[in-house]
Length: 440
Image (cartoon, rainbow, N blue to C red; front, side, top):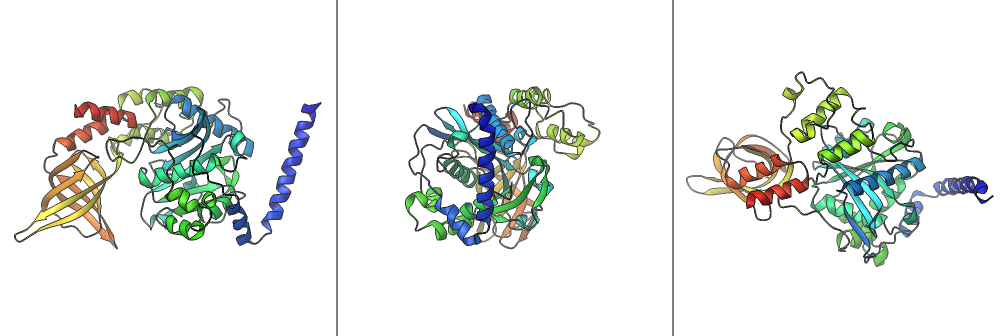
């Protein structure tokens, strides 16, 4: 008898919730935002059983995908999948990082950060990002957020630490300035009121294929401007309601950041075995790709061990000739470029963002001299420095920032070693192991 009443009870609760939500929507916007902020409860000393880390093992990733599947099915954002997991092509990319929250060893929260790649962003199909791109800085899409049902009504016990982890990872390791999201219109005000996302100018989309056709609203936040806004709104609030202090001043030992020997900005974890398991065996993700997408995937994973598990039914023709043959890693390496003249030596600060065997790309705040050989000193890691002769061969300066391409006369040993490390594997564990081997 108890089970026969359960569906009726659930329907009644849902109807009550919808009625309250509609009534709440008639409140003035400022009052609604005040109500949302009143619910903030960020514990500066979370339970030590809570661990926040990158999902990197098969077990962690599968738990994240299953948690996400159940949350999306429950919200009507996807149809149930036979695998019991929500897996998309973006999860297969080395530029996507999946964060997870574990409580007592069980995954209870997850969120994915998608950096731009040849596949673009999920929300790019419906929202224009050109205005954001005008402000410079890398963009990442926040996607695949889910919290275990047991922790959804616990005052943000999982959600706020997960959001803090996301903020710290994006600003310290992921080299991200802009975060973009596409969310259901019913949830957009939570992001606007608590985290100060601003809606994209486009009107809300009525049918978002990436979320089973559910309506969506696009929004973005500039992480460079966020600290000032957080301080103004939250700076004088009590500690547990002070998101400024929580995000920017509080250290959570529960957060386990990945270790990096070099200043790379991605933490890829997908091995050939994981690619095969999630995208061939458990789901038909690879099988359902278009010919172009299959080709792009081959351009990303160009190592033999990856080729064996990638979809092979694509027309190669001149595809490889039109795309880079080698994987490119984004970097964030500080450095300098020195040019010695008859009377003095001019030194220019650089921020290296990409490199190859015989050159690199870098930002500079001042115009750089071209077609003149100078000395490039680049800090590749905490203890790795390259010093070699270089020359600007192309460049463009606009406003307060320039973008320049350099060529090298002869890369030195640290440079050759670093390039060798990047070529040796695709995951951050590969890079770490290879760098230690080469160092020895």
